[in-house]
Image (cartoon, rainbow, N blue to C red):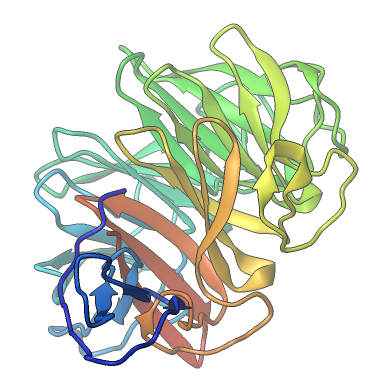
Length: 360
């Protein structure tokens, strides 16, 4: 992390001290004979702001899913209004899809999953109607998986989901992963050619058991992200943990307790604690970022498993912008990384917002 010194103030006072508060350091300048104090402002803390949206006659309500196109346009699952929005320049919103016209006989209902491809394709987890929609770059929607009724089959045109929620598309393989919380599984879909279900990761029984991908247990998984090595990371919400699935199909508990213990402490790997982690995203350096919904915070996990809280205060509910360490969130649900920033949805119906975290 680069540290940018932005301000120097000299004081001709015989003070020999060092002071730290947030990003400010005061320390003596050994080159000055008058014991000058050097004030260095270290710009190394994320900044939180709230997006102001225009172009909507009905304001967003309980937004959960969020994704981003390669041009920077945000794609929002406006869950409470049963619609998908495109947001340009972090401000101008337009409706891509709503519940007024069924797609393949299935109505858009409580969308809680978004993933995108580099060609502009958008996958939508149609959570309340147990299906996945696909919106092409021209804006045309089709029914991609599921049929609107609940189940757990392995046939893509039938009732293959209870709830299609967190999505992630892996561009290198063409696989789409869909978290299915009530089934305690992640559905792996091959999008190469005619789409088909390749596998259902997890035994389906609730619990936190590592091992082979088909016998491991998850509990209410909500989010998914893939790193550059093809490792799949799952927000195992009911287990308060982040699970890792290697390309060879081995499941491990990457961060958080192996014993379903919640908390808010930072740490390394299994010493860290989470409280109902929800959506998860990843940056080009394979750092994971997730919304820790029960703690009202945003967490970061390095590739080595070091967990830190980068925004929000555990247990504090609010909408405070500013320095990340003093900012607050109200029911954070969705998160996506783009160009050095994180975009986070907050889903309290009375406080529905998109928050931006500008990373240093």
